[in-house]
Image 1 (cartoon, rainbow, N blue to C red):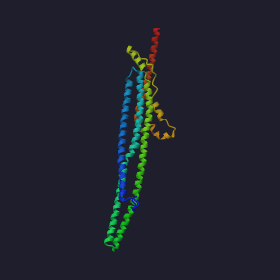
Image 2 (image 1 turned 90 degrees about the horizontal axis):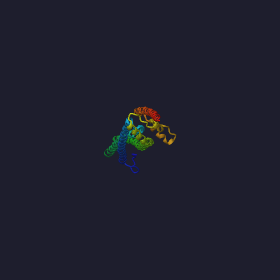
Image 3 (image 1 turned 180 degrees about the horizontal axis):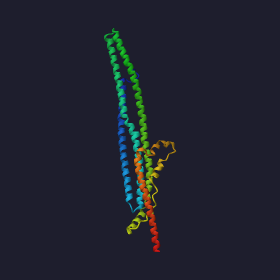
Length: 317
């Protein structure tokens, strides 16, 4: 690059224009990618926050539902499952910010540095051309003034040597710039796909659990309990519904277990929440503790109801 033989290479001007076009192209499209991924990540974060709010609504409804015990248990389970899904979505948001957007943002400075190097090379080239013109004028006007001609030749040699070093450095820098651009773009696109694929695979697993939890809601038993409560509101209602056995830990555990498959080793970083998720996890622990205490109350209510029912039957006999 920047060779002097124009019969076998592009001219300096054509070469510099080609490099400048490449730098401008990368700067433009990488900037657009950065903006696009940034918008995508922010919307994903808003969806995560909306999911957390939805889980809170489920939890509040479950706590206030005192008649339909089966529905209350189902809503409580669903709240925990949705919270677990949003944990993985939060993890995906953090991975996108670190692995994709962070890498793209660096290219503003990288392109700026490459453009400055090209500008410096062109200034050295202009200096060399100016020294060549001075030498040509000296030879034309004062061909017998060897001192002035020798001085002009010496200055031209110095400028040519500097141009050669600068051109070689720019050639290496441009090649490195293009190579790094290709490798990093391929890597960050791969990271984006892996983050999305990992999240959605975990989400499908948890949504399958949520579907089963909703299916466990016994609407007939809840309706019978409502009728009994309507007839004698002062008496406790025997729901016949067992205590909830699922929890956030049981939902998250299968996804956090280590995988034996080597092909999935790159997904290991996504399987456990990172440091930024401790605050969210602590709130989930509080939800789990509340849910456990509620289950104990449900079991005790069921036992009391069974004892009273057996007493009533014996008295009627």
